[in-house]
Length: 448
Ligand SMILES: Nc1nc2c(ncn2[C@@H]2O[C@H](COP(=O)(O)OP(=O)(O)OP(=O)(O)O)[C@@H](O)[C@H]2O)c(=O)[nH]1
Ligand SMILES: [Mg+2]
Image (cartoon, rainbow, N blue to C red; front, side, top):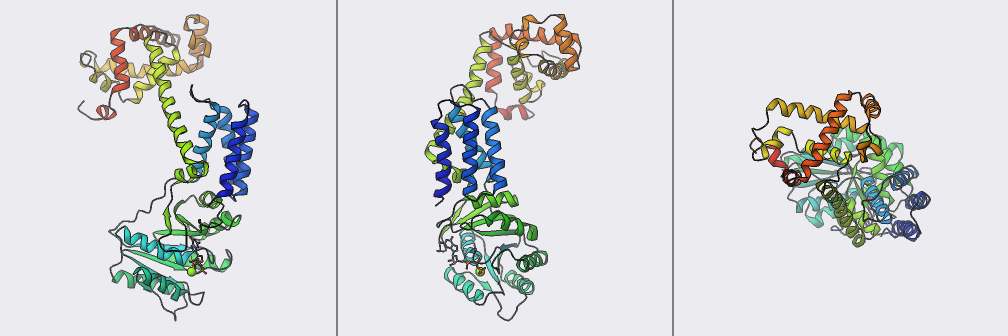
């Protein structure tokens, strides 16, 4: 399954792996390849272009952490963007304390009736008490089909050959199944050849009368280009809250999942992977993309990238400790401290320091820290790396740029010098330990 998309993405990856240097040109070429692969997999031109340019922009702008090659970084970006475009992990969370009504919508042959039975069985396994309603009054034999499927898995089916009004039928069915103690009602509806107006009107009416808790769009994964338009049309008529893509075992090109999430904003919940009742899989975007890109490699790469991200901080700490501290490092320290909560709590945590500082002093320091951050943001790269060059005209400029006063800029510089000395001493080691080692919850609780 999904061979086409897989092949296209692999080709794109090869472009970047085969490039002698990764520069803006090769990133552009790579993003273009990804975009084409997505279009060929029927993702929908608009979404494909959006994704392509996002990948291109990030690929050019972002520098990898030291130790991670640019090539790996580009693949990591591809993975992240594909996963997030495909939505988050869709969960079918239905409260057991109330009656849940699920409306299944989709065009003819998309797999609604099959999904009704599959979903019913899936929910039984999860401990729910589902019942089915055959609200397809359009196609002859629709009731019999659902009854047969229901019977094969022991699910009760409500239907009435004589009632030709789907809204009336569904309303009666809901009452009946409720009286039988069911807590999930799955409504199978009719289909038409395409997203015809008649069908969309019928679904809109059904939806507004039976007020489903969740409307699931059932999409045939093999239909290609029409996925986006179909999903969009149904979403307008019924407000789609979840998606099930069927026939993923067949010639599905894989773009359906991306296109449908893009058109509706809803997540893919499940995949139909065969004609048997048990051929239903939960859907995970990261697993799906992992499969497309070759899971083993990607997983190892992502783990390494994460480790390297952490190591960067580690090397920064080492530099600070050895006294080679820049103003950027001071900024980093200020950030770390503000991430940990209020300064008061931070100081309370240090034995010997709690009580040594007055409450007013701590509050004043907190205000100053905010100002120092503005000050630092107005400094040039050169000034941050080599603060010795700060003369009075530079100080004036920085104060003006940051909306502060000369005095505050000077205070920040003094603070920087002090911090540099302190970090080399034993107190610095304690502070450093503190910055890295405090359990987060220790600071959020009242009692530290
Ligand atoms: N291979 C495969 N076939 C499927 C899958 N889901 C459904 N089918 C088949 O697709 C055909 C149509 O499925 P139905 O469930 O009848 O589709 P429907 O949406 O109810 O169709 P209408 O009632 O005509 O609107 C049937 O032959 C099913 O067996 C799947 O995940 N994989
Ligand atoms: Mg049907």
